[in-house]
Structures are given as structure tokens and as C-alpha cells.
Amino acid sequence: MIDDVICRRLLAAARAVRVRSYAPYSRFSVGAAVLGTDGMVYTGCNVENASYGLTICAERNAMTHAVAAGCREFTAVAIVGNEEHYTPPCGACRQVLAEFNVPLVILGKNETAYTIVPLAELLPFGFNLL
Ligand SMILES: O=c1ccn([C@H]2C[C@H](O)[C@@H](CO)O2)c(=O)[nH]1
Ligand SMILES: [Zn+2]
Image (tube, rainbow, N blue to C red; front, side):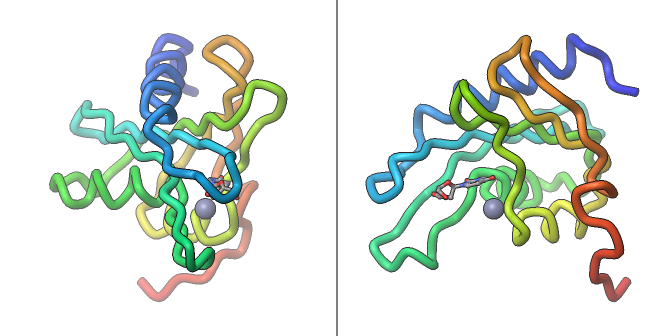
């Protein structure tokens, strides 16, 4: 499926970018790292706003970062929230991950405690036009 070394590398990248989270309202920091088929790792953290609904999740931040860098094909995304629980992507992020066919979602409490969930399980029967 996906190599443990790659999972750990993505989780480490997600944890590293998580410290840059801007979350003064929820105080819940999230980091995400997506692996492109170009071999590059693109990262993003959540960025909140006083107008709460404008908040950008870590996963969508990582995806837009990748696309802006020219990458549109992906192997997996890793998401790290707090150490106690997994942080599965919200519905909006699932739809964005589906747009670019990110096949695997790695949910990590830390680099060693993680689980891999296929996106198809997180978003079955998703909306698409293409
Ligand atoms: O998968 C998730 C779930 C939540 N958040 C962010 C949005 C908000 O800033 C904070 C609390 O919901 O966590 C993410 O970035 N990704
Ligand atoms: Zn989200």
C-alpha cells in the first residue's frame, strides 16, 4: 500500500508545519502534508479568521500550495492535529482531496501512532463533474 517510511516522513512534515497554525479562536492547530507524484511534499496549516467561516483548513492549504507549485497528482496526505485523537478531514477538505484524487489519508497522533484510510471510505459517492 504505502511505505511506513513515507508515512513517517509525511507525518513529520505535517507536525512541523502545524506549529505555524494561526488558530487564535479555536486554539486547535492542524498540519497537513501531501506527497505529489513528483516526489515533493507540500504542506499547509490551518489559518483562522475573525469571520469564522473564512477559516482555511490545513488540508486545503496544503492542496492549494501544491497546485500553485504546479503539482496536480498525489500519492497521499498526512494530517496531524493533537496527540490524543486523530483529526480526520472535514467535509469541505474531503471534497477538495477528491477533486485531485488523493487516494490515501494518513491520520496521525504522532509519527508512530497513525492509521491509513482510503479517501473512498471518507467520501463515498462524492460529487464530481469531470
Ligand atoms: O481536519 C481538520 C479539522 C479542523 N481544522 C481546523 C479548522 C479550524 O481552524 C480548527 C477547529 O475546527 O481546526 C483543520 O484544519 N483540519
Ligand atoms: Zn477542512
